[in-house]
Length: 43
Image 1: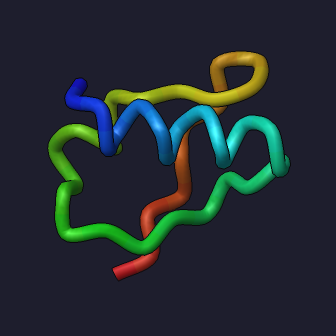
Image 2: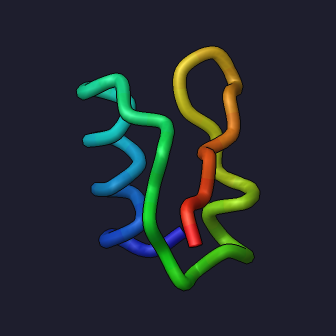
C-alpha cells in the first residue's frame, strides 16, 4: 500500500464510502474498510 492508496482508504472509511472507481483492481480488491468489508469496485 502506498501513501495515495492509504489516504483513499482512510478517507473512504471516515466518510462511510464503500464504492470506489479505480484502475488498480489488484490492490483495492485486497483492501478492507469498516468491519472488514471489501470495496465495491466500479469499472
